[in-house]
Length: 220
Image (cartoon, one colour):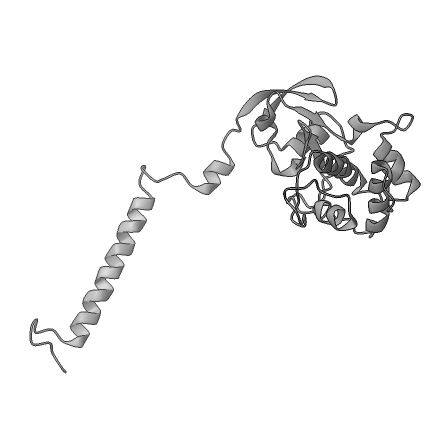
């Protein structure tokens, strides 16, 4: 058997020594895992006592105070704690827009933000825009132009539509705005781009565009 001239070790000797080293390392790791100084495991974190915090905000013009698990999303606070079920939970990943609400006049996906992050903010949901007896102009336009079928995405669509008109009036450009130095135009291309975060599985997109342009006073 060939031996290395420097150490006088055979190939078999080297393999045996390596196996012993690996086994010793594994034994040491096992002993460390069983020791009292073992680091916190993910399972321990999942079963840890939750932390609660009070949050004060205004929802649809009414001051509200909630004591919530700090992991509670704004969407769940609205639906499960304030029973404002108009705001829908769709994908719960911020991709469908069904949970869209307005916070201080800016539309957001309420499933992607924690309720405790909105201390002192003003939240507007679909219930705060209008009632069946006194509808918001955008709600009435959706009815006139049949901007919905199953209706599940409609609250988020309407909240986004209201915000889109505010964005255009404020001169905020979008990805498709050709001239950033000029006021955005109320074009179909602009509306489609700005509403692209709100998905309608029923495919009522053209009717939604008609409803928005109706409220804006422009032909669809």
